[in-house]
Length: 194
Image (cartoon, rainbow, N blue to C red; front, side, top):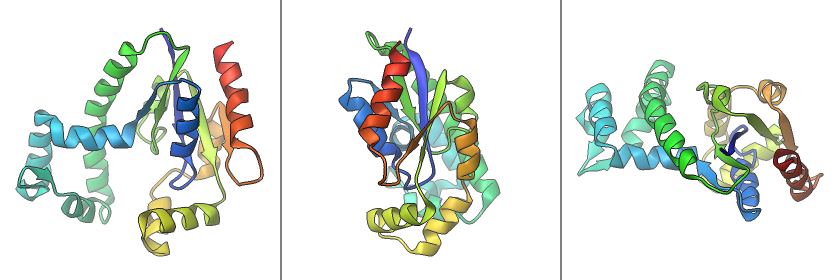
């Protein structure tokens, strides 16, 4: 069976860019944030649990009311933890099923911002942390998401500090514009395939 490799890093660090480069090498990638969003509109058990926990307003006209939910959980750490405790077990099962279906590959990648925080790193064979300087990350997220600096800083504050993620990782990819991402990825790919 293929090895399980996690990719994590702070918001705006370049996790998705790095993951896409691994895909270019033929490695299957599971984008946890995207899959969680899909599950929250497709998995009926999950939908019912979210409604029961956060109220019927969580869904409007059959669609997830993202603004309502975000407004609730990003202002209240306990509610954010509750949301994660509901979504992440369903996501974990979905990932395991996806991983089992991947054939003829030496490893797969699970890209997740909170891989360590949710304990998912414990189920990986190896973990890659993507690191970028905080100011660079802030500028990327402001440009990408059209949000304020304060909003980005608030999101950064809710994630595990970079130095902890770097310390816990098996591999670190520096995405600071000074080192070639491709060269770093190819080096890690070689190590994971031998």
